[in-house]
Length: 263
Image 1 (cartoon, helix red, strand yellow):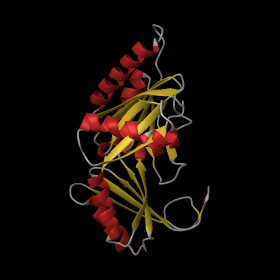
Image 2 (cartoon, rainbow, N blue to C red):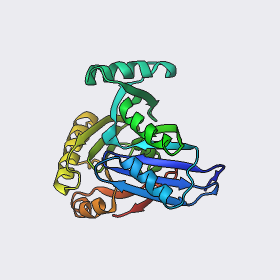
Image 3 (spheres, rainbow, N blue to C red):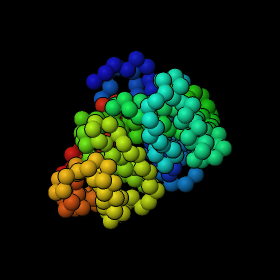
Image 4 (tube, helix red, strand yellow):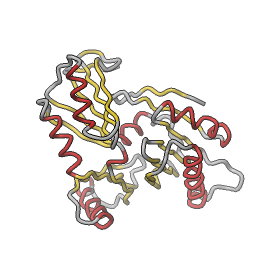
């Protein structure tokens, strides 16, 4: 539990879902007001209108986290100094994506051997900033939801194995070897189908077995993280069958997100 000195508005924004939470000053255990908008259209505007319509007074600044489907990721060798890490990241995304207007940042992975680079199209940020401004709210900070989730589950992550994040519109497969991340692979797919998730897990396990030189017969640890309770329920039989560790992440707009263990 930590002390919040002033009110905070926190948004978690995806392609078809936006959750807006309002935190009041003081010792925080949960959001004082929340609103969720889903579907097509201006979901950020809808979530903010729902929150304001419930009598919530919005603060002057907001923190935004963006879901994987709105971002681009890359793992790059940590051969550059901290202040110069964004330059090779920008060159990488320009080579892969072409000339697009991007906002790029890079964070050193826990092993210290790779940069986790992330990029977002400036138009995405522009839309969010515009909707906030209509309510008199300025964008204070923006970051990837994946980094927030990695921090929330840092005690559960295997030192050597596969982690699959089940998102609304796809899967983020990550592999860890020797205590460091060696792969980030986003696949836009029907993440609500257990057979699709199983296929992606099998593919990641195969790549990991080859790269990590896993001895024959040794099980590769697999952690599957469901974002929704419905997804977790659908995946529970497959997890029991294949020996995955399955958990559901409850993101609560704070570093210490609560988790609910399912199997």
